[in-house]
Structures are given as C-alpha cells and as structure tokens.
Image (tube, rainbow, N blue to C red; front, side, top):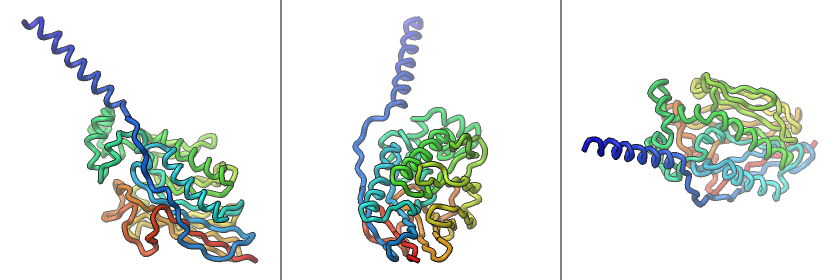
Length: 310
C-alpha cells in the first residue's frame, strides 16, 4: 500500500507545483479603460518667439502602469491636445511631475492587483505570483514594495528612458521627465542603469532630438522626501529651475522657465489615484485628492505659460 501511495503523492505534488508555476506566469489579457481626456486649465501670456512652459498634470491609476504602451497612450493624448492648441514648438519645455516613473514597477502583474485599493491589499497576491520575492522579504529584510522595485529596476530604468526620449523626439520639445525611484542609478553609454545599493529619486530631461539633456538629478530616498531641493538645467527655451518639496503633503515641483528677461512658473503634481509610496513622509499622498491648484475638469490638466514677447 505504501509503495502505491508514494508515487501517487509524488505525482500530486508535481502536478500542484506545475499548476502553480503556470499560474505565476499567466497574465491574462484585460481591457484597458481609462480617461484619455486632456483639458487646458490655464493659459497665461501671449504666444511669441520666446518659448513657453507647459506643465502636464496627468491623471494616473495603477492600471495605467500595466504596460508602458498604456502609460504612453495617456501621455500622448495630452501631448496631442497641446499640439492641437498650438502650444508646442522647438522652444517649448514640457514638465511632468515627480514619481511619474516609479510605479512602472507594476508592469505585467495580474489584473486583480490593479483593482486593489492599496498596495498592501495586493501584497498577498504579489507574493504568491513572485515566489522569488520571498528571499528578499525574509533574508534581506526588504518590504514588499522595495523588493518588487529592486527585482524590476533594470527594466524600469529602460522603460522610463525609452518612453520619455521617444516622446521628446516625436513632438520635438524639451521634456522634464518627472522622476523614478531606482537603486543606485547611474549612466553608462548614455543609458540609465540601476545598481544594487540605496534607493534614489532620479530625474532625467530630454532635448527635442530625444537625447538626454544635461546630467541626471538624483536625491537619496527617503531622506530627500523630508526636505527641499533645487535643480537647474539649460534648455532651448531658457534656463529651468525645479524646486522639489513634500511640505504640502504630496510631492510638488515648482518649475520656472526664464530666458533672462522674463520668466514663467507652474506647480506640478500627479493627479488620479496612485498608491502612496513606502517611506514617504507620514500622512502624505502621491496623488492628493484636494489641492488648491486643482481644477474640477476630468482627465489630465494642461497648464501653459508663455514667456512675454520681447
């Protein structure tokens, strides 16, 4: 009897492990439903030859990060609207909010994860579908979000640079591509890479030819979330200054474009309903529900400011 049970139990175990392996690799196709509308909520100044600052506050949700092409589709809708309104030219500087790239760690997950109300709510599903994360969780003492980020960091860096470089080249504008969290990010042969050390919030900018503009700007995470920082960058439209802060209870960038005689400023933040980030300041959100600068208009918001004509 025992001789009969042993192979039977072994066969059952093999079947279970095979079924589990197949399940972890499955990513069933799901329909993408998202608001692709983009509204011009502010247009200051008069169009001229001096360029303009276009701030985009995209309305983003976890499902937008299921595939880089979906995120790109939402951003393209905003860029197309801006072009149709005559807001894009070779001196335009398009600014996007910090951490727009961070949730790229959600790429290729199971559909039910994107329906979760919080990242923690989907934690059990993530752990089951990524058994290799258990080593990071228990042996290296990492939390689930950091473990998943580190496991996907190489592809996240590649997706982030590819997406915003293509958008800059396609629309022939300068893009301040928000930021992304990566472990020990660095440039090699003009490509953003990730290492194995501490996490940093890194920001790239792209010129109208789609190539990297200037040096990457990086801050240690989470220490950088407790203070303020400033970044300066020379663009075709003039000098850009980006002041970063979490003091409002969410990450906000104050972006200023100056041509030496006049200047334009816009405040940037993410809209929609993205989950809060691990180790962010207590009580803070990534996509604030109520802020004084927000319009009631649905979808992504475009805020344009022209430099005064000389």
